[in-house]
Image (cartoon, rainbow, N blue to C red; front, side, top):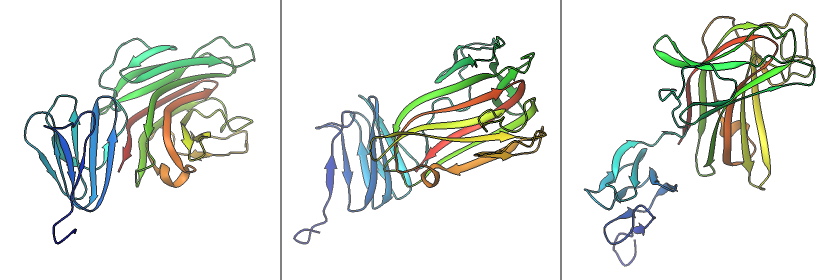
Length: 273
């Protein structure tokens, strides 16, 4: 308080500008995130009131969030947790044809590559129904035991320094893998999740986690996890605990690497709080 009067702070962003729009904050802890189109306001402690260019203000309590877009009314309150991925349930599909390269769905791009061992069979991926969910289906057949890799990537360029937690979760189902384990260099798993990010020094770093169900050749496994075959496995990790001082997430990708494979990925979320 100042001179016996409660202190409040007014914040203006491109989406909440004077005189109609503003963000009013009581003493507390907040996260305010602004993109080109939308401002997100989350309350950790204290209380806030978010007003857009139109409509009524939205009052926020701890663990609540509001959004305001250009020229729009504030929306909310929502839970403070937010999925920062676009189209993570793969609803907005742009093609029904299995792809080796190109745009698969809103927010997701497919690329395939061959190694230097003479292979010419690309893996493909498409969106299919898996139970009540939509899933990425990675498939490669007839590789002749030549290396290949098929990636599905979403570029986020999302700042995450202010998040208290950053939970990545998804379901994986491995139906088939021809190459044992993760290959000789523990880099060719039937499914790998990869996060490219920037740390506090401005250095770009990479974190990966591989999944496999058999390692008949007894290869050395690094950053890999054995899971049951043909069974849905839920993976969840707080990236704040495994990444080194993450400031910005450049992208997230799922990819299959090795020889032949048959893999599903579904229920993908990257939850910031």
